[in-house]
Length: 306
Image 1 (tube, helix red, strand yellow):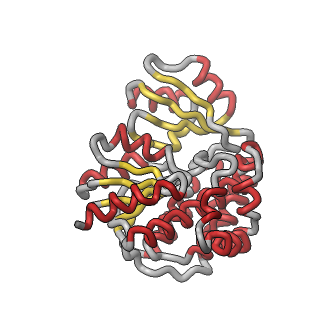
Image 2: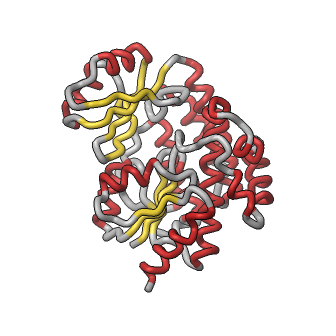
């Protein structure tokens, strides 16, 4: 089984969309996605600096659009889809397109609303996120509870992302647990926590107008790593995950249980590939960062089909 993985916020880098614009049809697709998301994706994906594209309103549509472009190009190059698909955080909005639940334009409309609503929620109270690398998992969780921080992302491979008040995050970094390293993340607020409650309401209202189809690929959810068999349920899950923890560790465990034989991370790739190398040891992985990586990804897909 080959799994496609769609990355989350923080994967973007300045100019990362530029190489994709060399492919036929990509400029037209990005123009449609820009209209749906109410953001100039081509300008931000080719010209804007790191600080600009770190803005949640911009970062989320950029990341999802890149994954959709890479997915379409991969399917065309390989002549087939992957056997399953999943997304990390906002990447779930790209994954449901790959699974046939909603259209690319519809998901871009939703991710535009999601990004704006999460940025507004983050502006209400100063909060942030920090990655905790290494250490004993239970000891890390106990320390977060002591500081009233939320384990917002269980990423697997020895990585947990803490979210909450800035003074508490500062205390976590100043007195790290033995065997851990704390890395502050360049994000606007405490995503996947109760601080995002207002964004949940905004996205739920937007999703009410969508009529989904049933998934036509195996689709896993961040909520608990289980397979989602209902389009309606898939939409419920992407709404609720805005304020609930991302369990990418459980997704990787489910990939393993399903007999994964390879993973392809869609653009802007890198982060999930790194987690897979630690959490899915021995599994072949391809990071599709630019169109130059499509041949390797197609080879992995077609090798699985042979």
